[in-house]
Length: 167
Image (tube, rainbow, N blue to C red; front, side, top):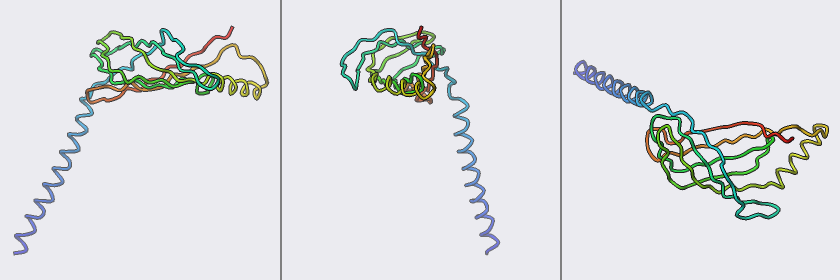
């Protein structure tokens, strides 16, 4: 009797190992079929001060997002952080949903919260530590993510760097 019982157990074990392998292959196969999206490009096209005091400034920024992809992007929201000279300057977010056409662009508004005075003090302190020389330019970095409303890929990270000329 035990001879009849062992093959059934091995068969069940083989079936469960096969099932686990099939699930793992299916999951990795889904990743292969996920769309490869290029990073959208964001730019600030206008800004107005909504509130300002010594410690915090709130700006309404008009943004343009360009979609280099061959499919439309249904955007659920965007978040980002701006750094100037290696110091955090401000943060922005938009929870407004909109659609960016394939190979097209869209504009939207977002609120940016900044601490210009704090950033300026940190940059001046950094300048003193580096010998007090006045730089010709300041580096900036914008990093964040575009959250999508649908699809396998739910967010697209982005990062843009550049230099602000001071002269």
